[in-house]
Image (cartoon, rainbow, N blue to C red):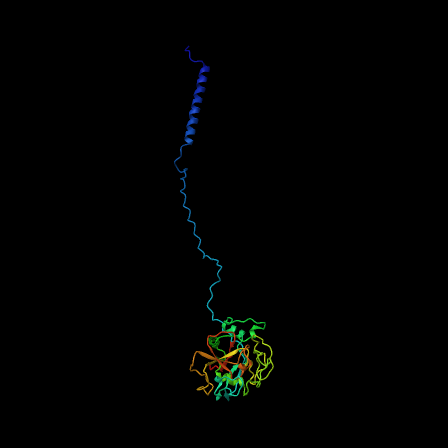
Length: 322
């Protein structure tokens, strides 16, 4: 009988063979799991789609704040109001201008006496005041004199040139009148108001009738005191035409050139325009004047740019023709 390996060894060898086959099979399966499969079951890697570009917002207008107020359309400036200037209508008439040689305190420049015919005209009831001056000119006059009185009611002291500039600006306002200075004949006619005496209230002058240096009265009146300043317009009794302060307070400018006498003077009340020098006529006297200087016929010539605090004016007007 042949001998061979024992049965146990055969079984052991068979078992070892099985184990080797199992290991080989498991290793092959693991390798195949890491190999990508080709076929219907493989899904291609999707290609990423590009993202749409973000849409830009519509730009909005930028509002800028500013401390400046918005520009406005130019407007028409408000029309300046004319000052309240009371005018008195003086009737036409004929009078004797100048003074007789017998009148006390008379000067030779007050003659010869002559007849003058004057047409009707409007003249200021009062001298032009500081308030009226400031309303038209916007400033105080060049000579500004403080006072204990209400300054608005005081007569304004100015030169002839300044008075003319006031009138020029006043006429630009265009109210119902055209303004100017009075002629010398108009002034004396308005002052006398039909009288032939030295003053419109008679032949004498006292402290309570006008503002002047009362230490030098006129017509036998006793001496009084000296106020030393202007008084509010309308402080004394008016004349028969209703005009105030035609005697005293401030001298009043006229339009006429000054002449040494009345030879060749106009007889129709118009302005004496021909020049005999560089002075214009002033009338009526001032608060520092002696009594004789306030007479209706008294007259003086002063240079047009004189500003001494003693010279004022009142207006004459004619109706504006539209």
